Amino acid sequence: MKFITTIIFTVFITFCSFSQYSKEYKILTEKLIATDTINFEELYKNGELKEKGTVLTYKVGDYSADYYFRDYYQYYRNGQVKMKAKFDRFGNLLSQKCYLNFGGLCSESTTFEIDSETSDLEELLRVDEKTKVISNDKFYNYSMKLDSMYLKKEGKMIGNKKIGVWKIYSRTGELIEEKQY
Image (cartoon, rainbow, N blue to C red; front, side):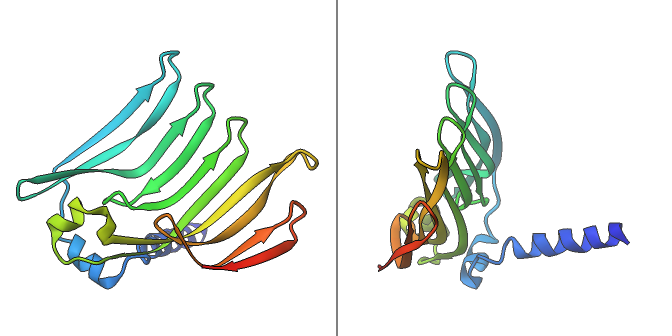
């Protein structure tokens, strides 16, 4: 019974993981096939891992574009994780967590909608502004008094622009302000 439940759960998660794409975006991108895949690692001079990930290359006509794909990591010189991110096959950020050099979570982002303002594949690959990515974002601060990280503010963003209602919290978790963007 556990095995069947696990299979059903896996299929459900796989199906839902692509639900953030608009119908138009799915139709436009289903035609694109990566021409190359490169797994990479970059090291600091001290031998510690600096970053690692996978890059997919697409070619439409004479234009070629490279995009991060799946899991991508950045590290501090001391080996601590700086950032963990997941990208779709077109380099759209699906989720991201950023950490301070002592390990405290300082921000996180989860994408819930991806759409495009173009129907031209080459333009989609060439112009980042044509892809609309909407995410839920959270930012954390460190409190010396509490000796821990706490949620400072949260809300939605399109790219790097705040939208909707943003909530701002005190270090004790109390909602202290709501701003409309």
